[in-house]
Length: 76
Image (cartoon, rainbow, N blue to C red; front, side):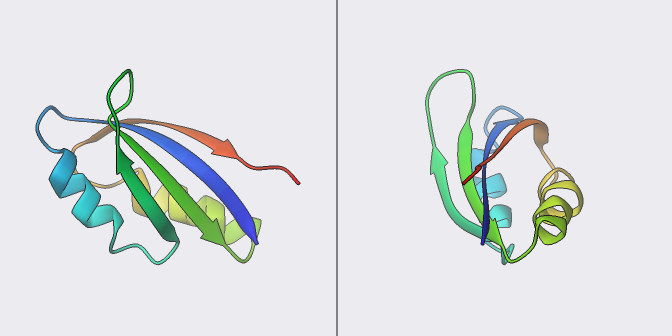
């Protein structure tokens, strides 16, 4: 299983909507709102690295009100 954590900056006040949209994505396993430089931390898992990349690029980064992301892919 491939695992990654994504730090997300959202438009101000849109954290709940973005969280709701993230929870609809199959690969998203956990979403946490946080204080600090980033607004959300997301844990995603996928069977292959290609599916992981697709989830990040095509599903997460295209969500309305997502401003920036920082992805950290976990290495074994």
